[in-house]
Amino acid sequence: MDKYAEMIRIRFLMMLAYRTNYYTGILIYAINIAAYYFLWSAIYGDKPSMQGMSLGQMTTYVAISWLSRAFYFNNIDREIAMEIRNGKVATELIRPYSYLGMKAVQGLGEGLFRLFFLSLPGLLVVSLFLPLQFPENAHTWLSFSLSLLLSFIIYSELNLLAGVVTFFTFRNEGVLRAKRFIIDLFSGLILPISFYPDWAQRLMHYFPFQAISYIPSMIITESFQGVAVRDGLLMQAAWCALLLLPIGLLWRMAKKRLVVQGG
Image (cartoon, rainbow, N blue to C red):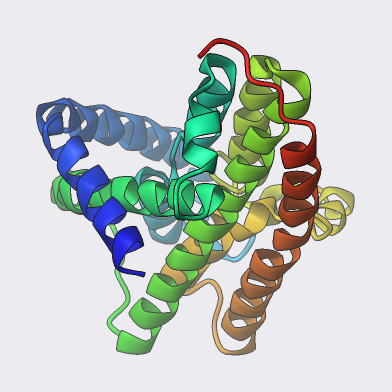
């Protein structure tokens, strides 16, 4: 366990060396969120609410969705793909730790850095000029924090799954681009799931994407309350467990047919 904690620390310090880049990131996120705010303001017009959400809730939803993405987002799928192509994975596999576990905790270190140097400062900046509505209930914040952690786990598991596919394809840039687009579209980041047609909402229940962005954002805006919060957290926990199955299966298959290119 100590070696994984050390990996988190090392990745955090590596990101700290490039912290200046994230000052620009705060500005970019703020502009992006402001653009969404003006778009939704025009869509709402004089309507007090749409799909059970007021404009204030929608503004908060957008801000939290994008700033939460800075925490759960990582590139461990691309790192795995690169290490397979250049042969570094052969060295990593003989080291005394789980290769996939090491990648996951590195992603956590990266996420923690973004949380403190991008998400929280970005939220402060955005709240200065946009009418965000934050809950006063401590239980809501606790539920949101747990939900956000589960979001990170699910996103990382999907990245691990996409990365392991490289063992079979050697090059999967197209798969990685498609995966990122699908997650952004169907996770509720761009548009809340409740705004999709009923048939699309039912279909999305069979996929883990809404457990990444939609559920935590609905919790923090208090659009989910009581039983809905509990069900959302249970759904996220279930996907965390279910995604371990294909990862484990593909990983066992991948190690049996490992072919290293380069070296």
